[in-house]
Image (cartoon, rainbow, N blue to C red):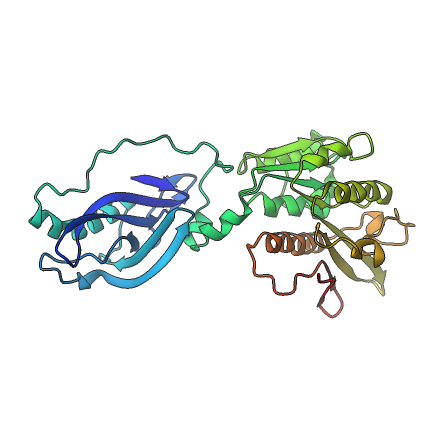
Length: 372
């Protein structure tokens, strides 16, 4: 038995193939968990890696037939069939589910070879300690997208600025298998920040006046082991910290600092995404545009040729420059940026390969531009 990325795997299960030979296969079940403690299985269906199991005479065991299809559940976990055998009240736990299917498959094998049992007493190697999460990602296994999620098993990611939009970028990326997420911000986490960031801090937490990066590390380290805080703003004296990164999200509004960072990231060949909002108050209603600008080594010229990233610090007329931020707009801006990031690494299908997109609130319009 083995737990592998939220799948319960039983290897060495004896069964009979169509040639009436006793061979061994692997049963794989989704693993239903609550804080790493198993609960009642969410489904009675189970996967199998191997030939279709047969009766003693070589005929297929039809009563459990569900589907025959090659499916890659994880990087080195491929199955060929799924079976369905449901008790009237369902399976009460994973033990009942696994032993029931093992008995169905191994029964004919035991008739041919009385020594054929599922208990093989193998040498069990230590589990991989390199997992970035404190508990298994059961969402990916349940949706059968673990192999796709593996594409985000990347090295070092940086988020420069974890105010409104940056905090949501952290929220979304903390649910991916990126090994390290470095967060940079020199501000304190204050009461007004709570109304434009994910989560709901208590009054006691606010009275401690933590730094933003310390607060968010405490929140997201409960889930992701690789949250690394940097309690300062990026400037010429410390921009070198970003040279070690594999990807950078720029979620800041200080133009001069951003101009420096962009120049250095281009020099070092590091891909990045810059986000921003332009919000205006007219006739007692807010309107404006959200922006996502992507820059990769394959396409950079649009940033300056088309002024796709503003480098001014603002003149105070922009509502966003006065820190009037809205949680849903911050979250949407972050979601658009993270979706694009996932596109770059093949998690999402990318047909247009846009490097610049805008969302206009009035009209609910999304526009993509700057393709390679």
